[in-house]
Image (tube, rainbow, N blue to C red):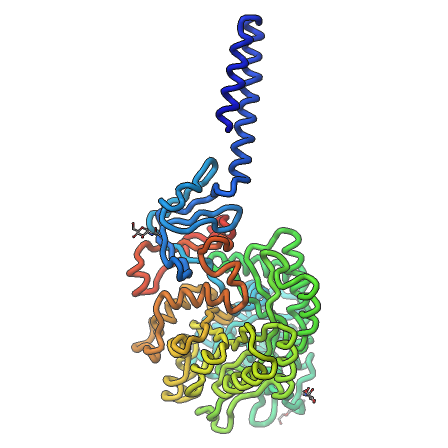
Amino acid sequence: MCVRRERGLLSLERKHEPRHSPKLHMKAVLVSASLALVIAILVAWFQWRWSPMVADLVVTNALVFTSDDSLPFADSIAVRHGTILRVGNYSSLKEVVGYGTKELNLKGKIVVPGFIDSHLHLIFGGLQLMQLKLRGINKKDEFVRRVKEAVENRTPDSWILGGGWNNDLWGGELPTASLIDDITPHNPVWLSRMDGHMGLANSVALKLAGITNSSEDPDGGTIMKTASGVPTGLLIDSAMNLLIPFIPELSVDERREALQRASNLALMRGVTTVVDFGRYLPGSSVNLPWEDFSDVYQWADSSGKMRIRVCIFFPLETWSRLLDVVNKVGHAVSKWIYLGGVKAFADGSLGSNSALFHEPYVDEPQNYGLQVTDYEKLFNLTFAADNYGLQVAIHAIGDRANDWILNMYESVISKNGIRDRRFRIEHAQHLAPGAADRFGELGIIASVQPEHLLDDLESATKKLGFDRAQKGSYLFRSLLNSNAQLAFGSDWPVTNINPLLGIRTAMKRISPAWENAWNPWESISVHDALKAYTISAARACFLDSDVGSISPGKLADFVVLSTDSWDNFASEGSASVEATYVAGVQVYP
Ligand SMILES: *[C@@H]1O[C@H](CO)[C@@H](O)[C@H](O)[C@H]1NC(C)=O
Ligand SMILES: *[C@@H]1O[C@H](CO)[C@@H](O)[C@H](O)[C@H]1NC(C)=O
Ligand SMILES: *[C@@H]1O[C@H](CO)[C@@H](O)[C@H](O)[C@H]1NC(C)=O
């Protein structure tokens, strides 16, 4: 079409030739040539912009793992306006390459769908990037040194906040306030343990919170005390809420910066969608996800600052508030923000001896763990939320907590009737015999974090004994065999956000420090692990029509890996992220 128009203009020119002087003639030629050029550019632009068929990006010569069973592998992807137009071999999408199509030749590199982290704490993790980092410290002296460093240059009375410590790395002895009281005489200190179920306060903080010899344990929590009844500074599960309200709320600007930092880290690791379980602490009635939703997420969305897609879960107690919002705006606030469902806790964590088991802890024979929510209350809330069509996710780590929630879900299903509700259990770490099968039978999603396996092996053997730990922990293969939907995540900042680490761990079940893999019969293939981090994770949060696979019509979120050998990747599981694309735009590096 554009070619014909140019010809028309030129022939018009020739007809007029004899009547004008050479100067005028030149001018006319120039004017009409530039006119022709403008028209040609406009036409080309319109064609490129509006033709239903022309791609703006074509990825070629790649080894694309699609997570889509209808075409598991391909070599090319065509993208248009942020959406996947076609997937296949180059010959099958050559016809959508047109004027303005950018071609990206990947020279055989592996491409996978953008990873979906099914369980993390995005803003909470971003804030930790800005606070005192104690992750990985394996000496108590170093722990003290870092706290001392953080106190320097701080004004008296300002809070020192930090987290990520793991006493198992220095032999298991728990830290106490006395360890840091001398170096922190004027500043309250609160340092949460890696798993977030326990924290250490110094004496200044305990005093501020009014925690003394005579303070009693709240329901679902423990104030650790010495043999003579003095608080040691450690607060477990709901006992943390005796102190947390005294910590001044963070400024909006700090939380917005946390989102940016967390998003950048996620994209660097190939994570393009996350399910955010908020800054919500066990047994807490403080609705932090709601504040972050309005102050941070909605702000970022409306000012064009969202860089990854976020699906948010809210406290189960606030289900009717979520229902009101969903009824007004729907689940998809935009292509960046999705309103997920509601979440509650059944128990605590293994590391803090508060996960709920059928048998007692081997290292604490009177202790079976903590049931952190009242049975009837949890049932009533789940029943109500489900009755109004909201998705419910419940944290359960110990085998008894998992059985309890499976039973509860079963009875809610029988009361409210069969529908596509995708109930989730978060963590599902330790399962009693037969429980894995029930996930499949009842259609319950197992939202698990492979990297926890590496943190837990030593403590699981110590706390549960070798047999129980071998038979019942991290049963990924058994869950898949039961046809349960397995959704992977990191629980970041509890473990590393990098999905490729989780994928490798799910395949190998071994850390470099160990001689043997942990119940290696529960290992899964690279295909299944990739799916658990992509399409199954998308189904687990009802986003499978938008993301989760490289399929025509879905958002063009994908990741280029550093390797071009599928065989090597499938056997070793080692690779790194070379580039990340969101909606067809390169966002990393
Ligand atoms: C892609 O190409 C391969 C090898 O040339 C061929 O075997 C396969 O059938 C093609 N796939 C599609 C979807 O065209
Ligand atoms: C707490 O108990 C310890 C040991 O029994 C005692 O030495 C200390 O004075 C008590 N503290 C307070 C504030 O009562
Ligand atoms: C749960 O609901 C039942 C029936 O509506 C009610 O009788 C009971 O008091 C509720 N229990 C709790 C703990 O809310």
